[in-house]
Length: 140
Image: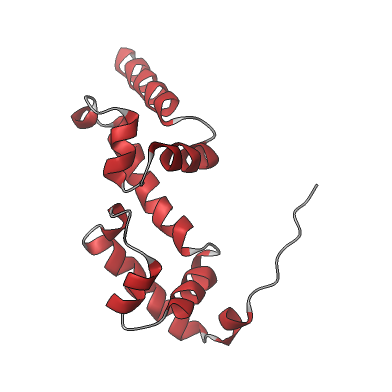
């Protein structure tokens, strides 16, 4: 069964492409420069305040440029960091739950849900599969 596409909100249609693109670049730079996405309390409201804009513009810029919402954008950065940590020997002593918290997820449940939704496996299973991949590569 195909999901019906939701209509694009009117406020997203009103934002000009160049304005949306420029704001999106500013959003990405701001979130990644100081790894603000790792702060589970950092909200769209705070981002809008930091960039001297409003939440609707943030939502429109993220939606127009990524096809997702702010939460999905932030979670993609968090998941990227979590995957790196799960594969890294530097973080081998950390549990998957601790890595989720270090990545910016507010709870174990939020981390596991987001991770499983994207990778179709648990963070622990991901870690085990990546360590097995490395072991196999070393034997070759």
